[in-house]
Length: 411
Image 1 (cartoon, rainbow, N blue to C red):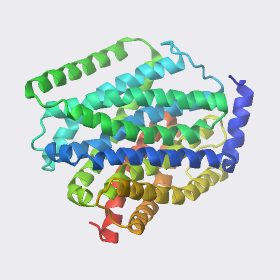
Image 2 (cartoon, helix red, strand yellow; image 1 turned 60 degrees about the horizontal axis):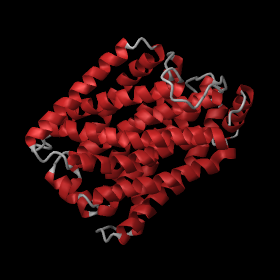
Image 3 (cartoon, rainbow, N blue to C red; image 1 turned 135 degrees about the horizontal axis):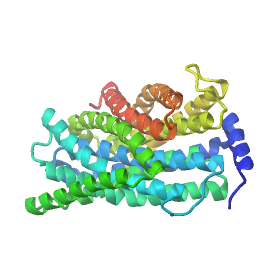
């Protein structure tokens, strides 16, 4: 099952220098991601009653989805780099690379889900959204939903990394898009399930206090553990994930403000997670590949991209067009099958392509320069690159999707 260090590095170098070799893996992973994320969008479209009952829930969803993708996408990227470097071993010991990443992601999920809820409540009050949702409701929905979703996403992440070892998949191509997409699919119903537990004010307050208290205890556990790698992951992850939360809540405000248009054209609502996931996944793929490239010394991480980096960028742009069209097609098919009110197929395609063209320009800029900057400043680009890329692109994606809707005449 394990390859030698030299053979792993040789395989990684061949793939990074000739990105066309594994373009099929990338396309298939993105296509599976579109289907999974579209199913997550279908859950949204079928939950109109819950969205009306709990104003602000839609605003919370982009942040909760992105937090899952950011935490586990970064974990997958770190493990992927370990695979390429030949240091990956699949065991759950607390002093091993897998065990340390699982402990760190569990802590980050719990702590930052509470933070997301607190900042989300403040944001909703600032923008006049979610007057009926209390802070306790935000905490229960964000944290409990996040924990439920994280179990499934963690299993998927480990399966993908193990599969990259067993079947010689390129984890940079496979892990990021699929973790992001399945995070969309799992997180949406998990949040809606958690939202069903906020019926009683008393029980909601008690549960919220318990979750917040456990998150605080988690902070003390990490900082008193004495484990350098565990502390390093937490220390480097928290600042960038906090920035990501702020960016994603801004995206959530944009989406929440357009809830009437989205509920009127539910196929666009179905396409929303797939559109955001596709933009984030494309950026995540590029960020992961660049991170591995920098770690292996194939690029000096200069402000002007090398030929290898430019080749990766071109191959990414080439796959973006059919994937965005696929997102529109999946949303249209699911909308027709489930009898959702929807614009025509070509209107959805125009929205996806116009919004995607605007987003992809920023995908390249954010992915390259955030990863390059992290590496040059001595930080782990696996930990910093993906969260910055996916969070930034959630905001960009939400903004460009609304612009595309207005251009096509839906909003």
